[in-house]
Image (tube, rainbow, N blue to C red; front, side, top):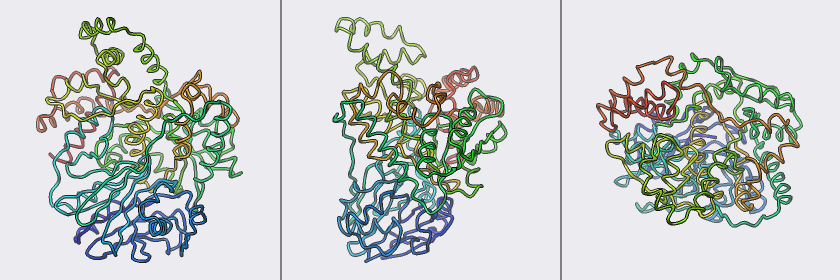
Length: 592
């Protein structure tokens, strides 16, 4: 796991820009100049600790800077008869490129972002993993190309700071984060997940190399259970490939408990597990459940209990690590937990992200399936009648919004992490920046799973986990996001996946490995008392900052800002306020 940076020009500021990715790779750093192009790399040594695996790596006039891990690199060497001089997964990418040009991406099982520079062709080939685990930002204007793991590195190489991308802001207010190629800075873009970029002769091209197939091949529950269990074991085992210790995050939910249990079974050793909980607000804490699993698997368990002071002290460092507005308040406890793990000199952990999306873990799914069923029962005359009275039914509830979407034939389900609805955005913005939404798939189960994998997980959770963990030089591996498992789950007939409870199939498998108390407990997200703590700490300073920033930016309607603030004080619209507050703090620092 590392940090990458480069550009098709020379500049004295590259050494300064490199500082913004030092945390991603504290073990080794180097800048290489070839043909008036600059390539920088910072290394966190996980596989092949020898100096031979340092980057930028060059073989046979092909250079690579690579961030991530390829879990099947040893298999690829054998299967494709690759002749490698080092023991690193980095060289495998060069050898595959030599053999297959750009056609090798689908062979890779891992998390990655990289740039290959072909010296003979004077061409750049950059790619990002299927689900967006590793970041790749780039800038291309007036034939100037910059790429990096970090927005700050790119900003350091620009003559002036780009203006605010208002479309990114609109997406953020609705979904926690900016979407697609958008960042909060006009001109700086994200290479989207499952995509590659080529730059040759001043022509830039971007193409998708992977799409999810929803054709249903698996129609028997018994076969699905058998196959999924094998795939899970294989996925966990692959992610134990490392020349340093691998630990496990253990929240107390099914996902992390099962991953930790399988890790223990496969390795046959006493593993280190980590969890976080809260002083004062025990209703948010899952430490008791994490302890149950830790005892069951016999791990060396390390709980971290944080209080309001810890949370506030880590607030600014967390926002700095995120680089742009990201409205997941769980980033702060995650920052504190990953710092604790780093302090214990552990570089790699397993985590449970991805399970909720592919195994239908969110309680919302069952509720929305009922909405979809209701939609089917409406006759044309009933729909017309509801359309005539829908305005009178509108209020601040989510339920009235979902009914409106059914009547207006809009996408019913947009994402698990949806915050501001389109109606609320019209109240919030003086002029709403618009963007196109993806058309829903026909099967509601496929659609909800797919769009959450893409937006809530791919854009939101994974970007948070990567930026926060790498701020503390920690690599996070996610076994549920092995592409073989993801592909398989989309091939399972929807009614088998739904079953009679959330995570129906996973719970059946998990019952062999973890306690019943964990399987049967009520699902809880990675929540924290963020609203209670910021209200207690900052009080009316929150609203004062929001209003002061808005007077300068002139983006939002002041009365609605005040309304949301007062609702949040009574513990309603907490996420809405947090999203506005985080943006206001960022805008104040960046532009005022």
